[in-house]
Length: 210
Image 1 (cartoon, rainbow, N blue to C red):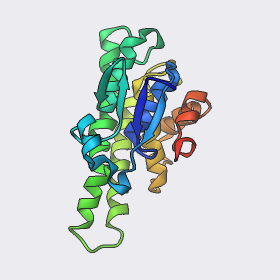
Image 2: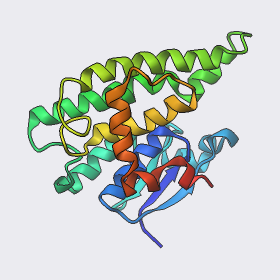
Image 3: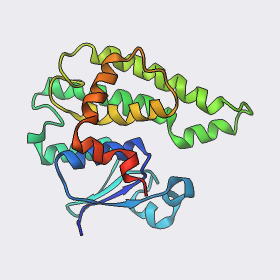
Image 4: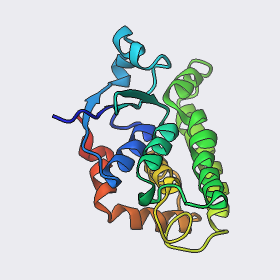
């Protein structure tokens, strides 16, 4: 049994990012499911691991790590040869900007607890769907323009980086909520390339659903 443990919700985009990173390195790990719909993240035993009550939490090297991008950067520094972060400072800034545009601008306002609160403020039946479509579409439009500044097969050049680990789960969410992807040609192309890679396939929510 692996000593590396990922506390994970199968449909969480933050957990999805970390699963991809672990698969790419590769790191042998086991998953402990945390069912957000059943409130497992609010239980005292989980809060003792992660006081925010969020997923993922990664236990590795005798440490308990939280926040998906902080976890990915830890893994990137463990295995710099994997290139999740470029070796040059300018490249790292560019990759972080792309990743943060998803993880800090799109994801937080489309998170489950935010949208759950929204539904308490309106009686409109389609409020949740419209909210998700609006903010995901707006965020992806801006991301498409950002990625358009760089050539290559992936978000930043011809090598996979942390930006791609954020992009793929966000595309999964976009499709789940019925976002029209027609205008996001570069994003769709990158997602298609990533979907052919074993590390991404193994991390897909359909393949880890309890």
